[in-house]
Length: 306
Image (tube, rainbow, N blue to C red):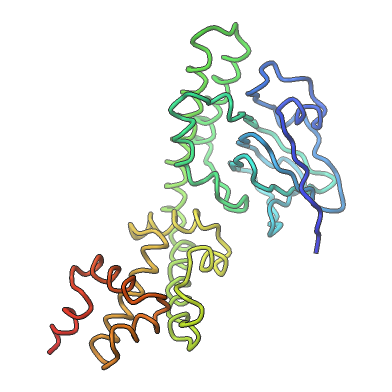
């Protein structure tokens, strides 16, 4: 196992230096032309942590590249869009003949300070997706996103005035909103893959509650089921919400209620015994969840069968 410690890159200027390009014109924001940089070549994956946001919209022109912990290999013509937030570990390894084109947007959190986006940027779940869950954009979508990149680049290259920061931030926000829309399109157009995820989740939850040691393991968590499905928790919830209108936690709760109804209507187990069998530490927590989902207490639900 590669136990290499991630290298922390603290500033955009430092990253420019590592990439072998000139200093950024603005210390807190930069748009980089990916065709002008040469990826670092190494036998092992390079792990880094950024202190700033990184948004990459690229095409693989030659060779292949491996991203993320799973080291998935990518080699395709359409644009790849992925997002990295500050303090996330990012790993990268490129083949010797790897070449790419496109744009990379770097934004330091301090640039957003005091703006509405500094708070709302956390709502964009794709910053917490694994890199292998990147967005595959169409040519039209790529053109839209490149337009925002060009506007941002033009603005900070121009004379900086009192309007500059707000104009750039509005362009970043529009970029993120369109990315959200395009991710939704990807979820919908890849229904077969998404449907398999939903089927696998259903099987995982069924198996989980059939195991005898569920009492000791407790309720299944979102990170647990996401790990079994090889998805990041946020990506899994995004897929499920698009398909069913419910996120992963809600799916887990639905399965809990389904199993609870079965036990309440077909066994003589007490409410406490049912709660413990379903992995609840406290019966009160079980009763509260059950009533919130069914509008009946477990006792009232059981009485309806008598």
